[in-house]
Structures are given as structure tokens and as C-alpha cells.
Length: 316
Image 1 (cartoon, helix red, strand yellow):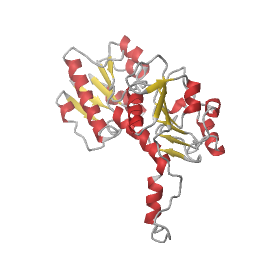
Image 2 (cartoon, helix red, strand yellow):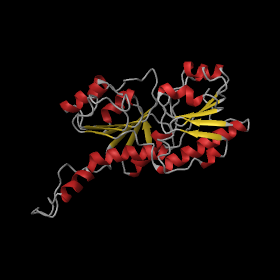
Image 3 (cartoon, helix red, strand yellow):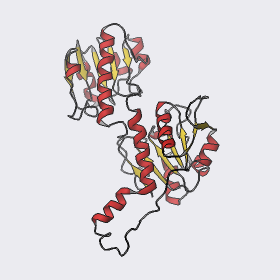
Image 4 (cartoon, one colour):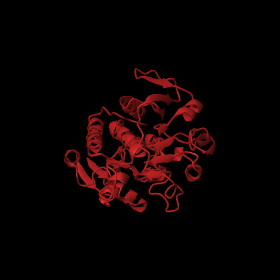
């Protein structure tokens, strides 16, 4: 079997091994593939792996020998799955590999808002504590999470993991989900208006759909507390970025922690980059060593099961 990995760098930045995948066939590994080289590098392969390289109907039509596309992520919008299906190509994804890592990033942002550890550590490094006349000082309000309300939008695996951490901190947890969700957690399902108005910290963990694109807009933000903080580790287009930037600059809400933006890498003039009290991480919630190790193992297992005639995690 001939295998092509079109953009393996994000999965394996030289700290993992491709050995198990290489044992399954003749494997061509590319860190990155520009659009104009996608067909060239995929031609002749039985199996192609992609993370962000687009395999649309045009590309697929030029790859008559292709039998399998493995998406190295949970989302698979980079592949025209309908076109792949018509061509007899099996498409798989990698579900639930980064749940705990993403939930951890949510609280990295929340704890940043609550106590600003890096700000105070930098102050000490500048000698400000050594010059202080008091044994303690704080540059930002120090906030206890216990008793605060955590609102979670999207109560799938990641949303529930976020809720569990919030409960461990003693927070009151409410959630909104597009369908009724039974849970053993001490969390209450509410409508979106209630969640927006009651949350001290709001975590977006829902998938992006045609129905919810840009649902966090000026009107939604106006229903939030002025003291509230918004965290998004879902998808960037869930938020109308100019509306959020305006709200942050006007102090309509207290802050935002974002691991995703509407386009990645972002345009230098993205209004959120310079917005007040907006902390942006470069889409790294999924990227812990442990999560990427799981991703690699699931990717190998997906191809092994396909070769054995028993495919799993099929999305088309």
C-alpha cells in the first residue's frame, strides 16, 4: 500500500514517531503541502492523510486510484465527503482524542483571568517585589472561582469535561445544548438567554454548524454580565469578531480567552488581536504531547481497520 501524509508537521513536530504508520506501507511524509502540490503528492497513493490540506471534488477527481482518506483531526470539513463517497473512497476522522487537553486549556484561560499568574511573576522578575514595602501586593483583582457560575455552550465530551473541572473548583455549572442532555453531573441545562445572563465565565464548546455561525454577536454579548469572561476553544466563526472586539474595547464584557479565530493564521488586522483584555493562543488546546500521541495511534488504527476490511470512524 502506498501512503501519503500531506501535512504531518502539526501532528508530529519531531517528537513522535511515524514508525507504526510506515509499517503499513510505502509512506511518503510531507510536513506541509501547498495547494498546487496536493494532486502531485497524492497521485498514486492508496491512502492519503490530511489535517488542513483541502481535498475537494476537483482534487478527488484527479486521484482515481485513491481508496482511503484519513483526516488527522475530529473536524473533516477539509474533505468533500460526498465526492469521496461517490468515488468509492472511505473517509475517517479522529474523534475524542483531545478532550481533556481542550478542557485544560479552557481553564488555563479562566485561571489567567482569575489570578494573572504570569503578570505577577513578571513583576517579581522586574524586582518590584524586592522594592515593595509590603509583604504582598497584587496588580489585578484576585478572584476565587468557587461560587462563580460557569456556563458551557455545547455539552458533548469536551463540554462535560469542562463542567467536571468547574465543579471541582466549586463553581455552579449551567449548560446549553441543542438537544436535551441527561447528565449525572451536578449541572443544570438552561436556555441560551439564561446562560448568557447568568454566567461569570462562559465556555464555548459546541461544533460549528450553518445554524450557529456568528451566534455570539453584539446582541448576544449585550445579554452577558459586564464582569463576564468569554472563552472559545470551539471554532472561530462561532463569534462575530468585530462585535466581540468592540465589546471588549468598550468594556461591555470583562475579557476573552480565544484559542481559535475565524481564519488561521489570522490576518494582521484581525480586530481581536489588539482588543482590550483579549488573550489569544494559537490553536494549541489540542496539541499536548499526550493528545497528539493518541491522535497518532488512532490514525494508525483507522488505517489498519480499513485494510482489514472493518473500517471505523467513517464519516461518509
